[in-house]
Amino acid sequence: MPTSRRGDGSQPSAAISTTGLRKSYGDKTVLDGIDLHIPAGSVFALLGPNGAGKTTTVQILSTLIAADGGQAQVAGHDVATAPDRVRAAIGVTGQFAALDDMLTAEENLLLMADLLRLGKSQGRSRARALLERFEIADVADKRAATFSGGMRRRLDLAMTLVGDPQVIFLDEPTTGLDPRSRRTMWEMVRSLVAGGTTVFLTTQYLEEADQLADRIAVLDGGRIVAEGTAEELKAQIPGSHVRLRFTDPAEYERAVEVFPGAARDEENLALRVAGDGGLDALRGLLDRLDGAGIRAADFSVHTPDLDDVFLALTGNGTAATPLHVKETLR
Image 1: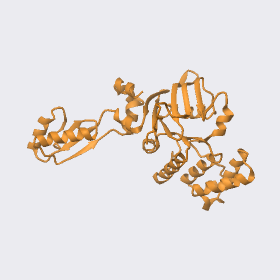
Image 2: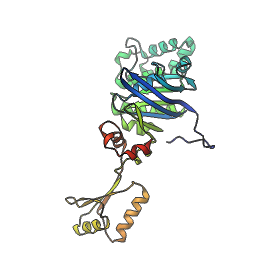
Image 3: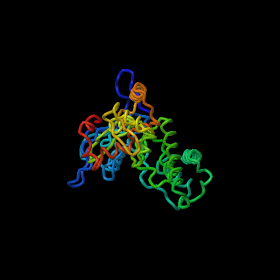
Image 4: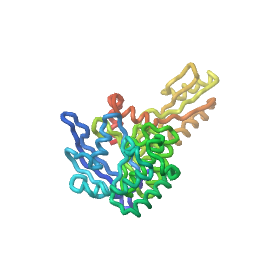
């Protein structure tokens, strides 16, 4: 679901923007000049290995720590000169649920309402609405200590929404959740964005970014090494191919002559023909087979996924990635 540009060619208004963002701890550079433009009402995913700087980026944008250099704006406010306005416009859900286990679900929400200085009536109304929205109204009077991991994360996200934030930072929100709970969280994120909220997501679950994000950035060594939609990133990584399998050795040998550059699998009578994975390329390949009178037993199309992107662009994979790939993605 890519974000569209305005009709005049300009970029949409940014909910989050950074220019040259930097942060170091001693002689270790964590962020080395980060530039971001995240449109309002979108989901942006920041991927990267452990220690890449994802959490540091969230901490700076949410005013928890100061950057060493560069500029950043959130919801139209400068994080360095107007931190109070930024805090009033955002919600943050960290890697671990920030709940008081001695309080009930409703009491946790009311505590957050008090901290945000909502009136008593408004706070109770808001708490009831969020309990219903996150399907935990039936356990509103149960202590948080008794909740499962998925329920804790739902309550944690509900607490983030008490102040009705414009921008939400979700720092690895589904870590440790089972697949069903993770998908429930995804649906909740989608509903937030449908209502106009901007979501900044950090995650190590590549499927999560693929499912949710309008745009994805890959952070490695303190720098953005790639940015685009999931499909744009996948398209830039080598590896798309069509696998043709044959049952007749004679047909296989004829196909080898038609596709001399294809990788051969003699044992399984299969050919791996490189391509971009698109319909035009597939149609052309099948036309060549048909024109030569060759019948394949079956074929399958293989395209890179975000796992391939992640491995190619981060850690040890970066050194093995052709330079032109990284330059194209930037």
